[in-house]
Length: 153
Ligand SMILES: [Zn+2]
Image (cartoon, rainbow, N blue to C red; front, side, top):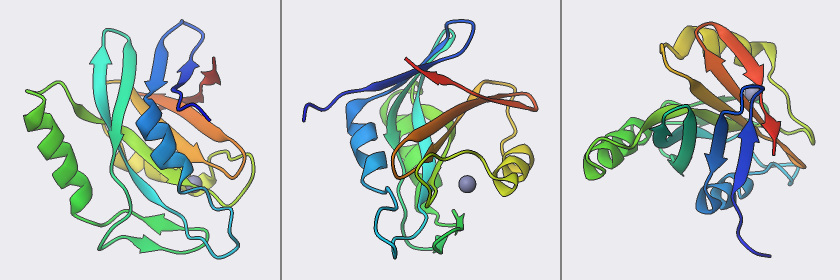
């Protein structure tokens, strides 16, 4: 199967492009097995005017607390990767949002997700949220206090 990028859009034609290498890593954490745990990390990439390109993610590691249906991203390596790529890119790569998995085929945000996004993602800029399900991905945007789903192109 060819590696391919995935693109999402909103009603205003703004695009969120997830690069092929990132898609591959995200899909590798799908909770297909009955014993696989939730996974989470941060999204890293660049903003080009009103478009967003996701080039990298952080992945589960030491310090993270994972169960079948919960995940708390506590590891220090997540922020360390954001810092590293930010410096290496001369400032074009930045923290863009969060991803995690759900043990369901077609995922949608839980009440816990909505609450934690409101509490923990503080930015005046457009932020991206991804949930990786067993059969599909959910991608949303957060602008101010409003979170809304994006459509796959
Ligand atoms: Zn969730």
